[in-house]
Image (cartoon, rainbow, N blue to C red; front, top):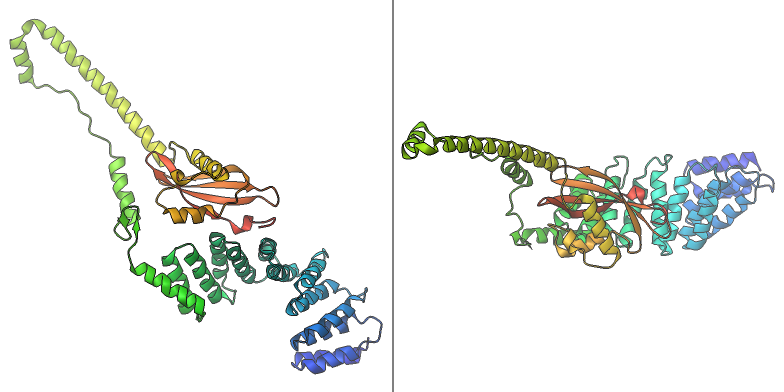
Length: 421
């Protein structure tokens, strides 16, 4: 390799003169150790959007077996194939880069592979690739991968999972695309019928991040705003008429845990005198009866206090019947059998129940894990095992219904959607 011409190519590339850079890099090749020259020539040609030429030059760089950055060239080749819309070739090149255990920028190849698979219609594997890119410790800015993961979830009809991915991306301050991602979050909320949250996401994208909403997002924002303007009947209640949740909780806590007044048998002295005058011969019986009643009342009052204390403790500890595990198990068994699950849900319209259940696969087995309990809400960890792929983890959100528990929502942890998610 001609080092002088290679250096001229470097200077031209740094100056932004990519045409001269490509010429000098290619002119630096001598037939021996030309991997670096062909690599940089391919980069210059990519800048010139000469994708087919870049593919040919990157391929020549790979012919140099001594070049230590072959994995980087493979990833760049995948990018060139993708730009040329040769997505199968792109996926093959990215996989070749990932086959090298010493390749340090694996997140780049994973993101590229996800894009190629997405274009090929292999959305589930694309989502898995994006997830792995986001979790790569070397990735300095995983927001892009998370945003793409959300798009893959939306394509698979899993808007609740998309919400979790988009939220994680928007929370990353270093991610330059937070505005676009917040708009995508708004679209996911629209798909879930959560118009209040959709409006907030759209407004945050526009007002906080300065993002100009595309036509589709603007239309969705206006539709959600209009939807919030008309009260909606939900199970006999008109939206907005129910008191705030904290008021309800305070009212219930004052009513349900207030110890009832005990009714003790009492007699005055005058009553006793009247009874004595009326039936002196039964005085002993009267007094014994009074003592027995007093004893019985005291005993039953003590029992009542203990029972009330036990019930209060059980309530505050999140215990109930049916238990959280019984309700979740019944829900999952009914879903797996294709039966109605309405009896296991509460305070969620039928249409939204169908959307929530859409988070779950159809053919699966499951195990119920940790349960986070409180007096009125609980969270149940569920691990779902499919015939193929890695296990999926879900959180089943529950609320108190009477003395037992019913389901109020199902969420999926995007970090657990490995193995084909």
